[in-house]
Length: 400
Image (cartoon, rainbow, N blue to C red; front, top):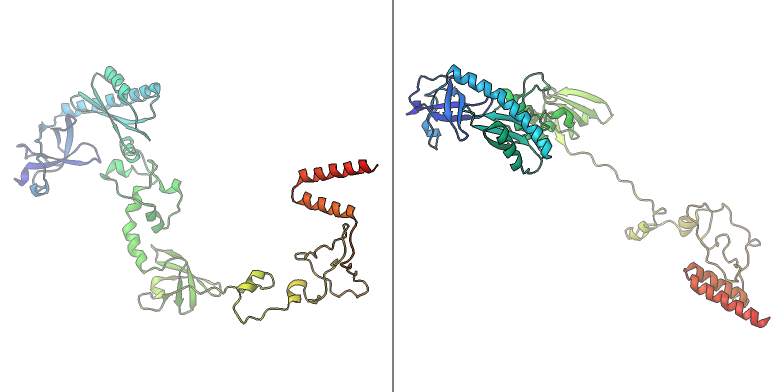
């Protein structure tokens, strides 16, 4: 029969469990009842009266209600709540003595006082077997520890939110919704964990309340940083306000304009989205990047060599300053090309240009040995240079 099922809740905002009326069809919403659960005998309240639940919705066999609750049952349940608080305090002290990395959130007794359930939170698995033995010795009841998450911990402890009202999970929220950071972005909220997190340290449950309406309001709004074509010209969308349906635009002349969706006329085609304008890419300077000369397309006219290397004041045939001047060892060094050093504006006269040495001139042997030492030292051959010095000292001693 459809009238034999009632819905019972054991906490103010807890889950609803179904039981058979068991001949107590006179029960109404708010009536206390005593039922048998997997934990033992407990006291609950009827939230769904008989006749409001269809048996077709239930697939498992239901347990019957033991009896309606009495005032004595209510007084006993209140005394057990106070006793459970003392047991939770004792569990915190014993866990600290044993050095267990856990935080006790609360405790709960069954109506007959035969079982005590301790709720705790921990980051990792905890070996609490010794703690269970100690608590059972003090409370003289069967002890069961159950690990819960941060949201369940806030539900057990209770409190008040940033809105000034009781926490939703404690007052009326029976199941925790799925919440993501995308909801905060959709509602244009600051992505600051301190402002969008609740007492449990997780994202606020109220972010899911208005998420659907924000999605609906944003269907006619353009996305930020997109471009639209308006009667006043192309503009970039700087920001949108989904609640007020206002769009902030920046025109090409850097003017900031605010307009509503009705004024822009997206549905009528007055304002429509367009692709962003292509930004001009500056051409590479060929004289600053020699590699660009090799990669340039065929047929490209390159500047003269004199303008690329020496600047406009030097011709390709004129040698750089100091070219052809002999060094101390008699060899002609390679002309170095300084980087980013401006060339002289005028070509030096031919009389001042130092003449190059003839190829037939030979340097003395002493200078050749010194040049060889310099080359060895430049290549890191310290040991070879020492051997050459010892060889020269021996030759001089023999000559003396």
